[in-house]
Amino acid sequence: MAEIPLPGPAVRFDYQTVDTTANRLYVAHMNAGTLLVFDTKTRKVIANLPGFPSVHGVVAVPSVGKVFASATGEHRVVIVSAATLKSVARVGPIGYPDGLAFAPDARRVFVSDESRAGRELVIDAVGDSVLGGIDLGGEAGNTIWDPVSRRILVAVQTRAEIAAIDASTARIVARYPVTGSKRPHGLVIDPVRKLLFAADEAKSELFVIQLPSMRVLSHHSVGDDPDVLAVDPELGRLYVACESGVVDVFQVEDGRVVSLGRLAIPHAHTVAVHPVTHLVYLPIQQLGGRPVLEIYRPKDVAGER
Image (cartoon, rainbow, N blue to C red; front, side, top):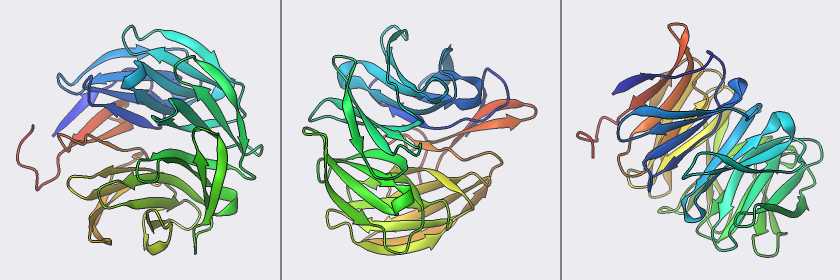
């Protein structure tokens, strides 16, 4: 649909987060050390925020008016006011902060530590302070909020399992093996169909897991080094972006996952989807010598909303 030039050098991007209340897309420009703020209505970059060395994860939390981003290069999490786009706090330390998730019931942010320490950092999203850490017993991959079980789920990639955390007590309440996997990393949930999807970066496979039983239903081949996943709950569409430069697209119906095809897009290892417009966002580190944001519309969605 569109190809928007982005500021900054032609280097790697990482996670994104969509704020539907403010019509914003926040993009971690990892190797540039900046956080891009994109207006999804006007399709313009409204800010390119510096001060996020090696930024990996980002999550917008409209209910507290803040954005949280993992500044991996300085082993901290940067907290930004959504109203002013100014940093209000830098909290930590944490070995290798990666993915982040907000638990609305406890109003806390949970942060993956992908270092050997294997801990989960817990942040008070209201008070902008660290509440403590949780020993995972292995390297953490992505961290997400599960609206079905009302728990935080973490891919403990070196143990090939999913750890479930009670957000209010900040304790692990269950561990679930991802049967057949070797190193699950990326996670995303389809709350409508009550399915968890886990991308195994070692086996290049997508695992489909039933919620809340956590039973593995099936697994499917994807591109090499799958990283970021995104789901469109209304359409039942799943996107798997891979470090190898492909995006696998699946249709999810009645617990079945069917491949719709594969897009070959160099450097496209991160993907986000707008749940209302169904538009898909792919920041590309280099096209014609500069970074761009490619916007796609599924073929079966007529026009924009």
